[in-house]
Length: 453
Image (cartoon, rainbow, N blue to C red):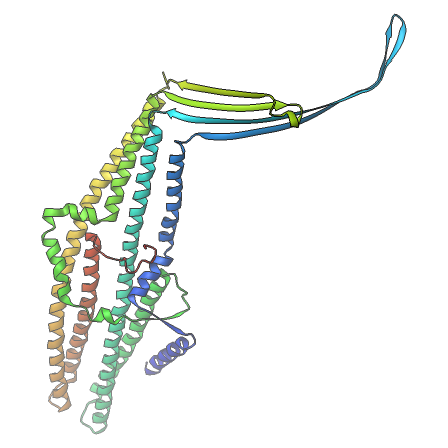
């Protein structure tokens, strides 16, 4: 097992030395995620379509202008013939004729009234664009939070790796001690075999923990859209120096939440996006209802025609007209469109109601997890001190020959377990504190978002 561990560490060091290492902090990771995330970039690109649709909606208020032109050429050839008049033959020679035609024209149409559908269409596209922009901001917060969780996972695995390395060092020291005492006849073979097993387990735990760290790193590397074969160092000292009391403001925020839940809704980009979707659905109802109203279209035209290009503008034609279309019976098609739009609007309202319940549930559950993680952090910190003291006592007792190896190993296992719980509690507190900020809508990512400027 010792040879296996050394080989594993050797190949790990050798592989990482082949490529230059890139250091990525938490801030760097969030910036990379916001830059490289495919879904986020697709959503951002879709804004261009929304902006184009809004521009087109404004264009419907303007008159259309079309230009036409044509040119034609025709050639007729008639063969010669002989015709008889009163028995006298007359020879008609071949005839060839050519003609050309030139045409140019302009026409313009403008919708003077369509039941105000064009006005509502502008409002609908404005609401759609605003909704898309708000949802984009929500996606940014979501991606930033996912990046934080994945980054904290790496930090957790790193700290746990240190715990395993420290445990392996202690087991090696105890192995050397017991091996020497056994050589002098002061320790039994049972103790020597037992410490060999514990040393092997410590080496195996170190290997498994190294693999867990590599797995967490690869998970983040893929999420950030980086080269999986690159060499990256994830280290952020600011994470380790967190303050437990930094969550006090969050607890205060939650205590006042019941009286002003509307503030949370106003902070949540996804909720505000849904509100604009509802507004768009109301615009759709008005657009559908416009089918019951008459449509008035104005038109203007100009044209000219000539057989010679130089005479093209000698003859001109002008036209102005109004076209009124009054719907009398549309085979219930308009009523059907109105009904569909109203149903879609009702469904949007149901989605908003469901989102309100979901937001309250998310906040409540995450806050409870946050409070529990804060208490767990305090308890686990005390447990580490207690387990460390017990291990110290058992180690000293065994060193002077008054203690049993079994008691020492039990104390060591308890200490490693307490350290593990403390590491997990630290990063679980960090994760839940960011999660509650996200669900409250107050997770600030502006400093990471270069696109937001």
